[in-house]
Each structure stands twice: as structure tokens, then as C-alpha cells.
Image 1 (cartoon, rainbow, N blue to C red):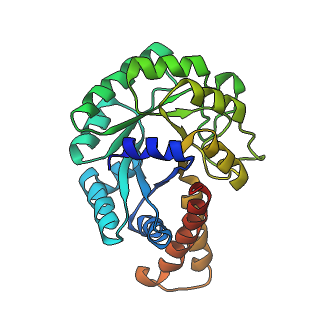
Image 2: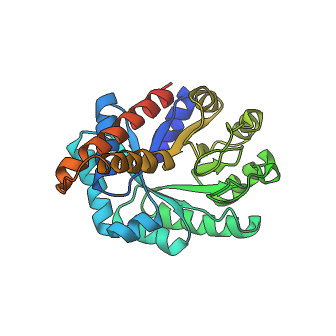
Image 3: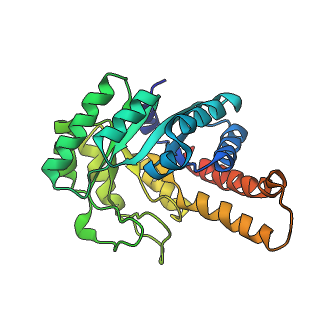
Length: 272
């Protein structure tokens, strides 16, 4: 099933897909072990930096092979693509879905760039995600003035033909200093005026009850990245203080298991 079809079905069922970034074989394995254990579908996400680190073909083949090996229904997605050129390269390499993030550009430029990527993706039958509004990235301030406006979202989806829309309702990338307060009424209003699949970025650190409420109000894709990196590296750092072992095959498994357990917890939240 194509990702865009899956997302629409889940939105109707008030459920969501968990989208997990992976950075190497070990984090990929942890994510896939969790999806296999819970017998749930998953989206595997790659950013430009992860693609450049692993190599485009290697990263795609790793993800595709892992989905097959663990018997998981899943899709490979470009997260926060910053150019139409990168999106096209990923589509040609076999990605099921691409995100074009022009959210920091003026509305008209965001529309034009997103529409261009939608045109590219149509030849591949792939899902396209865009972002509208201000979802704070690492080191940026949170600002409610940048929240997604329902009527603007309606116009954006109509003019671009985009399948999925990441909305700004109070989440942020990275960790939160205080418990995030999502504007769930705004989310409901956006969901009522557009048929696009709605995406929540910055899912790391948001309480489970808030995520569940967001799913009921129209979110059907939740992104997790920071928590995966943090638990993997934190577990590894703790192990390295206690051992002089140099065999990576013995050192990495506990960190993989930590990712596995984390993702299992997140999957329990989104299944509805």
C-alpha cells in the first residue's frame, strides 16, 4: 500500500504511524526490532545529513533490507528535504515519500517549491509532505505567531496538491525545557478544513496523553528523532565508562535494545 493511502486510512481510524529517523545500522535495527515486536507498520526517515553520512544508495538499501528482514510493513521517507533536487534524487533512489521543507520561506515560495516536488513525485506515485508555519528547530525560539493558520493551510494544500502537511501547533524539534503545550483546538480546526494527512514534528518529549489526543484530532504521522539519538548515545556513553571492550559487536547491543524499548513505547501510543 502506498504511504499516502495508508495515512488517509489511519486518519479515518484515528490512528497514526510512527516515523523514526535512523542514523546507522544500529539505530535502524533498534527501530525495526520494535516494529516487529509490536507487529506494527513504521516509517523510516532519513535527513540530508544522514544520507550524506551513509551514502544515498547504502541508506536506502539498508532501510529496505531491514523492512524485509524483519517482516515489517514500512516506508522510507526523506525528512526535512531542503531542495527539489534532493527530493528528486531520493525519489529516483526508491524513496516512498519525500518532505520538502520550505516553511521558513514566504508563503508563495513555499507553495511554488512544494508544487514542484509534488509534480516530481507524481511520476513515482510517491507521497509528498510539506510544512506550513513555524516549528522551532534546535536552538530556535518558540513563537506562537508562527503557528499554522487553518485557512492558510486549506489554501496551501489546494494550491500545491501536497499529500501530507506538518503543522505548527506548539511542538518543536529537540528536547523541551518545559512541558510543551500543543494548541489542540487549532489542530482540530486545521483538520476540519483540509483532507491532507496531518503530521506532528518534534514528537520527542511530548506526553503520551497529549499525543493520543492529537491523533484523535487528525494527526496521523508522528516524528521521533531526538529521543532515538539521545537514548542510543546515552546508553553507549554509560557502557564505555564501565568497560574497556573494543569489540563493537559486544558494545552496541545494549544501545540497540534501548532504542528498541523506546520505540515500542511510542508505538503503543500511536496505535489508538
